[in-house]
Length: 119
Image (cartoon, rainbow, N blue to C red; front, top):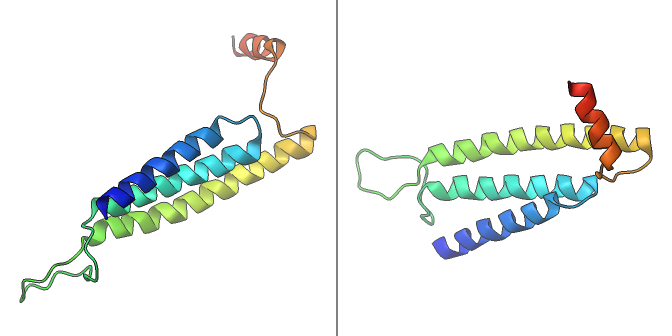
């Protein structure tokens, strides 16, 4: 079970990084989503990987239980990543509507102009 979850985290991370390095905005958004899924699976795996065990400690019996804290962290991370994805989609949509292109490349002149404006 641990090897399956570790390989799932590795595959999700590799696919997310591969998609983030693309030149279009939609694959970048998908890559960020895959990275958040990888983090969620990793956080979930930090608790015990016990099958059919409740997330509640019974102080009267010696029963296997899972740690409820990683489950709460994953639930919070899902909500945060959903909000972050919505914001990024809106920013990408506004950039596409203003320039009619969703490429992320900059020319050498654009980078020189940006460096001159910062100074």
